Length: 79
Image (cartoon, rainbow, N blue to C red; front, side, top):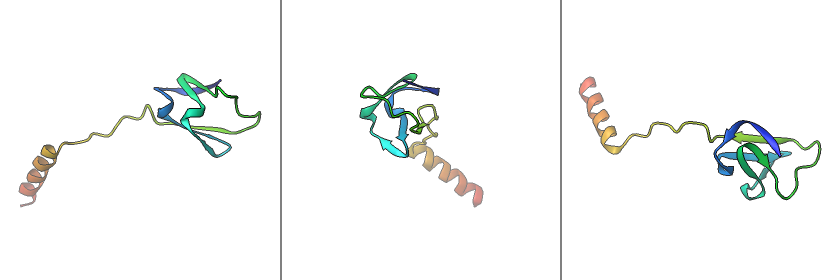
């Protein structure tokens, strides 16, 4: 088991590489700050890189109505 500096919601909130080789989410589990390889940990000295994007907030997504309202506002402002 390896400890992540920031917790993840689940194994789909991280991307794991071992010695620069992508690891399918089916070969590891994540629970909070724990990253576990149930079928055996990488070898001693293997480099493990984890990209944790589960804590990145989603961007504000506007609706079509909001986009139309903004377009009209900009159109009036620009004349």
